[in-house]
Length: 198
Image: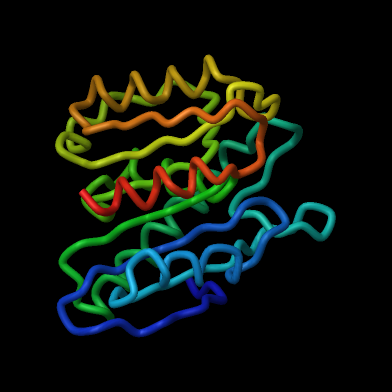
């Protein structure tokens, strides 16, 4: 799959840091943030290629929180192939993925299907409105989930359900709450920095 993507070449032997924007974002949304978090890393930020009334996304939906599951399956396979190719091109032994909202959802979907592709996951305001099948290969994966207590797009109960599922698979999960809604708070930025420093 040939996504439009922004790339910053890192030093040899450094991790690959992938970023995935939210609905209406672009490959620039988190690219610089990733470089600030890990200056030596390879950074790749693919642009979603699905348009929702002009807003870029990674897969189609039919309403708020209602996903086109056939398209999600197709797009998950395409993104997994893209990640595999980026990993090979950079020679990175470790891959970190950071996604927000729709970007977190495509990243999570890839991890549920091919968990070997990304070792460390940062899921900001994810929404997984289905019951994932057991995925024992998630064991040992490091996952940070950040969310808003009053997020009407990603209800707190569904965030907790996802975190519980990941823990049940053996992933090492941290869950960070901020008191607001779907916006990204400074406390989330701080939590991400702390998560990556450990």
